[in-house]
Figure 1 (cartoon, one colour):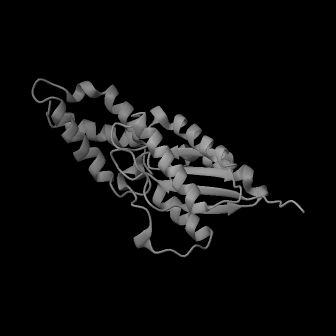
Figure 2 (figure 1 turned 120 degrees about the vertical axis):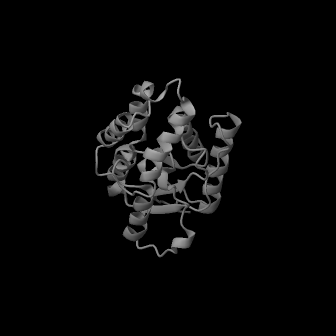
Figure 3 (figure 1 turned 180 degrees about the vertical axis):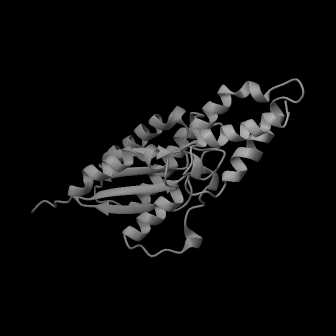
Length: 223
């Protein structure tokens, strides 16, 4: 009897469910390794796994299998891994649904590079825009009602580390005996988070933009 031969390269994409329980830097690598182990256990070949706070990309050489069952196993096992080890402060879950896209062997190097550069990529493109590009590129018909619940504020997750570093470096500006930390949080959301909700891309320097607001804040004698 002749042996079957196959080569299937697949990119799997799915999203985090809760805004309060995102993928953190503190456990991102552990999560990637764990998912890679799930794939190996089921005879698949992990090629590239990377994530940003609100979603994950998994590229692998696929062994013939029940695809919905594989995705179910990856989601359930990885979320259990995060929750049992208390890697997230809040209960972690994945959203329902997923995107699965196939590639030829010649495309592997480019797809691997693309996934490895996710952090840089999302400095300019939101997850929503990225996912719609995938659907259109692969000619997938879709109903916008049944896509992921995209997090608008995660559209700026790429500049979040810069903002946080800047805020902490200038934290003393906001903390004073007259009001304190609660007012600092209120100011942060009123002047930084809220105005940027729903923005799909940032074409300005976030630190220059924020420093302008800080100058207005201090000029108005709030401290």
